[in-house]
Image (cartoon, rainbow, N blue to C red; front, side, top):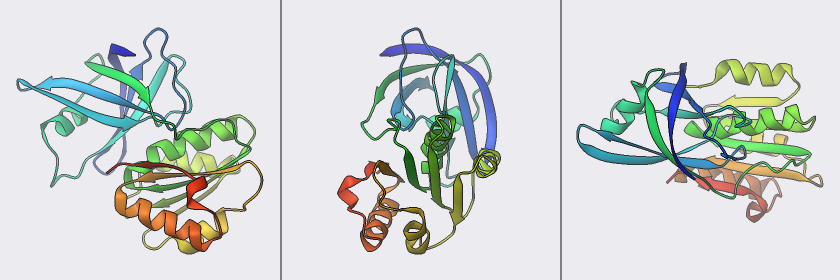
Length: 212
């Protein structure tokens, strides 16, 4: 689907990180963990980037989480950070096969911006009465309120700044219908899949989204 959508809300959710709530166009259907393309013209130049959904649903609105490294931020990243309610963006999608499909237990390994799909998937699973666990590697956590709410709802949430092998081994059970998800940049994906291997879980069975 290609559409132009309005910004419904902009929320600060962490250091140099905002959650953009966008109005769902008619007929838009996406699952937690899928991603969309956002596009806009900034200072006469056309830009487009992919962002994974961070909301558990898309009924009236949906959310993406945008994190920006101040030392690497380009014009489009800054444009997204500066958006206000009522501004418009072009979207395409959804894309991706690494999404929640109602599994009875989800384990989401998230590095940096992978926290967006992590909270969306975990919230969807909890809402369905299923089990959820998150292992989140970062030195600057985002979505703290939602992570706390997930803990209160019975999900396992671990935030770690460093190696994740022990946390991954504790989170995975190998139970039937347990699904592992991995979201993050290439270095994190490599570490996460290695940790799964050490824990006795076949990394090929994980749903992986490599942010590059």
